[in-house]
Length: 126
Image (cartoon, rainbow, N blue to C red; front, side, top):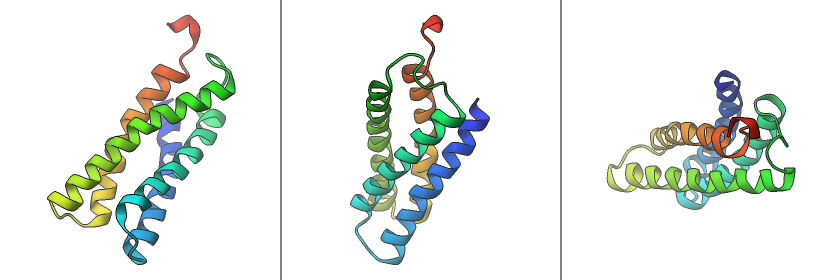
């Protein structure tokens, strides 16, 4: 399962990093709001691909609740993402893209864990 999530996460990360690269790096928009927008769009991609290729949707919660919980898990991920970006960009003065890659890697495991254990875990496994 984690192998498929790694592929799904890779597609979502490409969306996130691509948006960040184009708007923050190439066009010079402020990194903070660009990172939020890219993260949210990548979260949508991740959810859609995850319920199609990784997790069994609707096993534990109704789809509407499942989507809401997915976004709650993602809010924590967004906080981690923004904190890592802030530290590396503002405090350590690391290149934007290196900082983004570090932040994305940091959030990957939280997102997988949160989705697997809090959202898509089957009721009989509780």
